Length: 452
Image 1 (cartoon, helix red, strand yellow):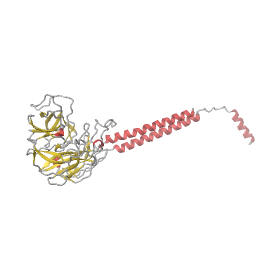
Image 2 (tube, rainbow, N blue to C red):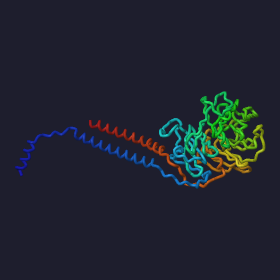
Image 3 (tube, one colour):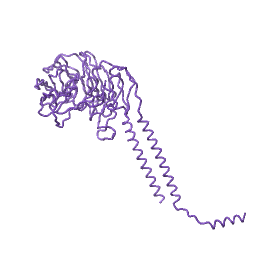
Image 4 (cartoon, one colour):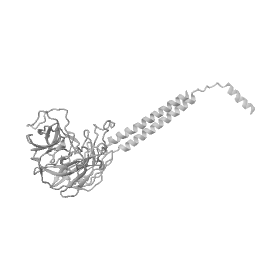
């Protein structure tokens, strides 16, 4: 045993020395950290792809409900953020359109354009519901989409554009007329752009579009898009909602600048009255009746002077469209705590109006909290709610040929906007990934400095 031990010692002493690199241990630790970091990054990348794929996968369509029977839905539902876009997956014509303003899904921030995956910049989107089933889709048009729906529900008039909800395509763009224009004998709109945005609204029968350009009222025939007439309204610069065209288009009543005036077909002033919008407003799209009466909303509460942005109590009354004088009308129920009132259509003496209700405040915190289609029946004690939007609805429009047809609530079809879901997933997934990368790099650099 002694000889073997000695032999081994001699062999060890005679063996050549093998130097160990001084940074062997440091390099081994560094390589191990790199492998761990790469593995973590790979796992996170795979997880992100799997989650994104699951979120953005096509969702099956809900079954059609109602057997093709048109009607207003029994109830309106709040829609998810991923609701399909009508431009990509049209479900029109629509029975209803509503909007929660800036809180409506797929609305852009007013000052920032974070939603890079959306086209345009729409601060207030709108939601439509199909005529024959509970299929919901999002519509984005211009700055504020609004709810100016045609009587048959097929077309949406938004900031001067007519959108075909059945196809998702634009059908018409309203154009301004020259300042000296007062009559278009050939029915054509001359090419002119004075920097004025035309918005427009439908007449009750859907045969015309009424638009305002400064002190001019532009009547456009639909569906031809030809300009029928341009009327001057001196001393008045109204908005579209305060211009009422008689059913035969021979008389136009304009309310603005504390004046209520009637003009004949040639633009000649027929009558004029000084009226404040705090005390009276024209009744809306369907203010005119075939017998020549013009309906208005009188404000019955007089608790404030120059009320402005304040809720009120309103009641329908009638004027003679030819003279502006008061005439007999049925006794309609009062509408209380209302900010906006707009009669859309009639069935006999029964009026159907869209009413925006407030939060019952009268100070600077007053706001619209809900909007509903109501039935104003002569002799009734209160308005009858036909259809109310979800809580917070600011704008509401309906296909007026359906106001007396209600269909049962069916299986909702919200569609799916893959671009919206993917865009949100990428945006919200990128932020944590960037933060994680910065942390990993900082840890690597910190340990490297310690080793040195």
